[in-house]
Each structure stands twice: as C-alpha cells, then as structure tokens.
Image (cartoon, rainbow, N blue to C red; front, side, top):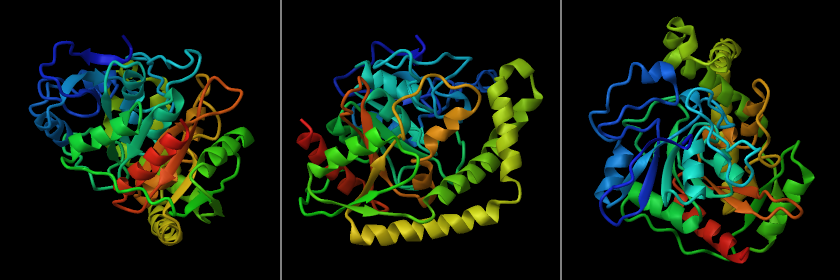
Length: 371
C-alpha cells in the first residue's frame, strides 16, 4: 500500500481516524520523511509530536502514518523509494505533494482527517489534486515540536479533510475549542490575478466565488518575487537539514533529490538578505490588501493535476502557493467544479495572520453555495 507507511487497523475508541504524515512523530514509530537514508538512521520516536499528542487528548484514533515526497521536498507526491500514492480521481495523474498520502487517505475514506506539513503548498497542492479540502495555518500558530524540518522559516502543519467540516475537526484536534467565525455575507472578496493560469481554471474559480457575491480584482506586486524568495529559504535550509545524507550510500537518496538539494542550495547562495527583504515587502502588501478585503482568492494550481513530470517540473506546482508561506499567512484550499473535466479546480482563500477562523467560515459558505 503506497498510501501508508504504517497502518493501524485496530486503533481503540470512537474518535475521528487520523492519518499522520510520516514527517510528524508518532510515539513508538520511526519517522522516515519518505527517505531511505533517514529511515536507516531513525529510531522509534520517544514521544508524539505536539500536534499528535493534542489530537490523542481529544480522542483521535491514529489510523497510521502516511507516505510523502522524499524529505518533503517535492510538489508532485512522487516517491521512488516508498512508492507514490495513487490519485483516486485519476490514477494517471500525480496525487500532489509533499503530503500525498495524507490527501489520498482522506480522499479514499481510509481516514477522517489527516495532518500534513506545508512549506510551499504541501497541504494545498495534494488537496487540489485529489479533490479534498485543507488548511495551511499561520506561520507559528501550530507548534512544530516533533516535526521533521524542511525549511523552519516556512514550515507549518495543517489539517486535511474531505470537506470543510472535516478540516474544522482537524483544527479542533490541534487546538481544542477551535470555532469558525460567523460568516459575514457582506465580506469583500479580493480576487488575486496572476499570470500563466489556465483560463478555464480562472473561470471556474471566478464562477464559484461569484456565488458568494461580487468579487473585486486585486494584485500583489511582489507575489512572484515572493515565490522565488521561498525557493531561497528552502534551498538553503533543506540542504542544511539533509545535505549530510548525500555523503552516505548513494542509493539511499534518489537521484532527483540529490540533484535538487544541490541545485537549490547553489541557487540560494548569497540571496538570503534579498529573500528576507522580499518577505517583509510581500507581507506588507498582503496586509494592506487584507485591510480592504476580508479574504483574498486565487487558484491553488494553474492547471489540473498533471501526469508525473520529467525532471524537476513539479516545482512549478508551487507557483501560486509558495508566496503565501513566505508571507506567513493562512490559506484554505477547497475544490470547485471545472466544467468539462473529470478533475476539479481548487480555490485558495487567503486570510490575515491568525485568520483561520475566518477562512473556515468563508470556505463553509462557499462549499454550501456550490451544492
């Protein structure tokens, strides 16, 4: 089963079944980060990660640990060592990553809720590919204790579920008492326009949003620069975390990941100060936009879930999501109909820092309007 690293079929209790990405510690099980090199060195975790401990305390049943892209460093979900989870909507398409198993476990009904990590889109992209919902949380809101790091500057943990209600359940497992805001039907929606999006995807997102009311176009001048800045943070910090593994058994790290860690580090060299300045600039731009709009909206992906890529093309899947991580803001991914396609589009709702309650309210209203 390529979805699961370890599956637990007899978890006691009647709480929600929780799938945990294998970058998050579960007591008694090793954390592999989807890597043979890490797995060979990993001892069973001495304790649950903070988010898993909280979930257990709320009655969650750990259904098991699920697969992911190697080192969390990939947006397609492809993993040559542990296997690639099958996209339940179309087996010829990628499941999205890096939280691939989390999305597939939820989409197939093998788990009620899943936890994933999101550094440049890794809960939103697989949600979009598999037709489920997910929430990227505000940077720093959810503790990362016991989570395998990719880029500590950008890493977050967030819940994934088949619908908005399941995502809210996931947030309550992380934060007991989490309650969405009351939806304000007069809330202005700012529609972020970015280049290189399939017109059919843009039209599907627009049609969905108009069911809530008027939308106003908005632009973020440094949106694309922020995506590049995210690559600097990831390139520098992912190599710092995993570079030592390249000196070991050459077969223990995939060729794609060996190349990626090296190339991203070289591309990031000398650019940290620039990336940090772009981070401040884009956060200020988002904050200004969110003073005028209750939420901002754009697609999660510029096209439908692709077929497995050649080389490193999967990094392009983060072009609409990575900037949000750099800004440190929360974002909700929700599937929307795509006329003429057996695959959905997905809308990304962005809120102010700490605005997860608002995003869940808007997402629930949109989900209801689409029924």
